[in-house]
Length: 373
Image (cartoon, rainbow, N blue to C red; front, side, top):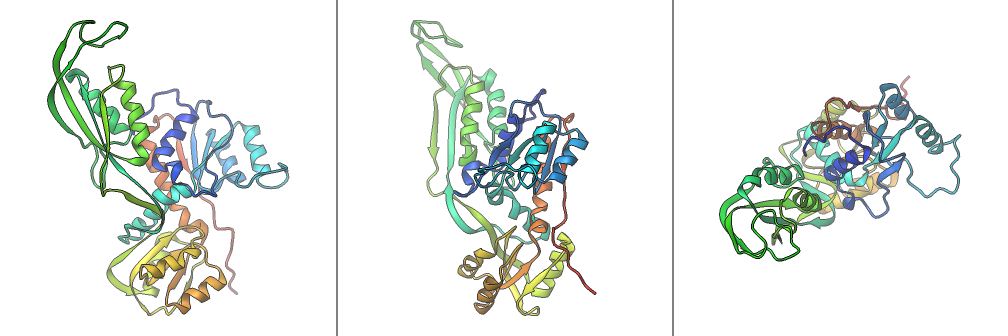
């Protein structure tokens, strides 16, 4: 993603987030995207948080930031009354009074970032989707460009998300070709003469694009290409669809015990509370993660032969049923398992937002406190 020039509007930040967490990946029951405020306002600062809480909104105001990007939606269920003495009305009223805008990336960010960041921090090589909800395709986009404009077009394609794969970016195949056409009356050719045959050199550019970035890539191409109607092709690559969904699973590089696994979680996430379900000395080879309230995915864990499952919340009867089937749980708290994605989102947004605009992370403690006497 390229750096956006000043002045930068909130809607420009929205587009950046949609590239990181495409909204079509959100669950059907979810509410993501623009929550409250004015998308046309110039962005003075961005605060990223798990919750769009009153504390977060106050922090944003204190820092001079006017955009809150939250993982959890501010307005989730349809409201008949907006009571400003209770949540979410209280925070919504404060945001409106302070001129704050709120945007949410929830289950779409779960699909693309939350669990990836969690697994990476723990050092667990998890690369398979736990609960597959759909698939997105990979496409080859090809276009011919006058050589003098080829570099500009390549940069625009890459900035919009083309040519990126695991471990690589700025990928393209290019080769020299020849174009032939005759501009007709009423056309406005960038080269050639109306009514005369034109023959000239072009550079053919081909890039691979993941489906979530396809629309942005085509828009970027149209914006910079010198032709009125660029001759391009978009081809879906057979057999290269990528599964999408919630949670990740995979095999550890070395087997370990449930207790050692839980200690690793404690060291990395520093949760306010940590509970396990299962024999702490049992051997664990295959693990799964789902940040937040992922306990209901325990049956997906069984389908994949998972030994231990890290998540934020597990219900009592879920724990009983899973344990009876041989699945161990590590419950680290909703906040602790989702807080890491805040840093990830800040890290991904920062390169595309002008340095003059602060992009800040906001952290809150788990609401539960564990007492010991």
